[in-house]
Image (cartoon, rainbow, N blue to C red; front, side, top):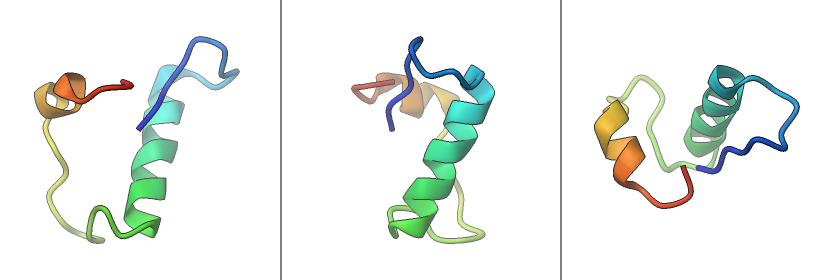
Length: 46
């Protein structure tokens, strides 16, 4: 998941879009548990 200051959307919108993309790509199952905020922060490119 990538977010950035150059993206015109607000940060929470960027995060929502990235999560929706991850679900669409099969990285997360619909209705499944998402990673915690800490886990997401540990991942590169956040």
